[in-house]
Length: 145
Image (cartoon, rainbow, N blue to C red; front, top):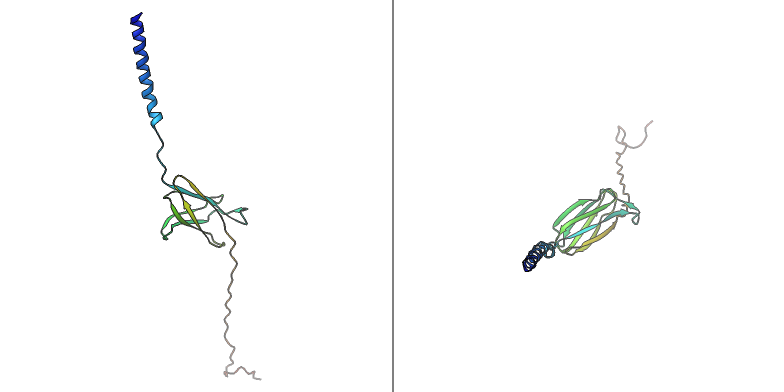
């Protein structure tokens, strides 16, 4: 019986070592730290009721250097990833609407959310009328009979 008892102990110990070695990578594996952040949001008008596809979103550092540019999708959404933690200026433009500019703080591993509501630009028309003064063959404006 001691032969089988020793075999059981050796089998149990080797099984325990194999199981612990296979579990160790699972326990010790950790996801890499996410050192970047995201700016995401929507572009709309009329207090959010009309989403605006095709708006141009430009992200600049606080010193004015452009770091990203993107267009809003068909639902007016945008997402700009892989931004270093910092304060950014986000400009949104679209033809027919007044431009918008916002300050956004990006933190590591997080998403900063921005809802941009563009106002309809006022219509500006300019009409230039030019005409020449009518001058008769005599050089006078007086009518001749």
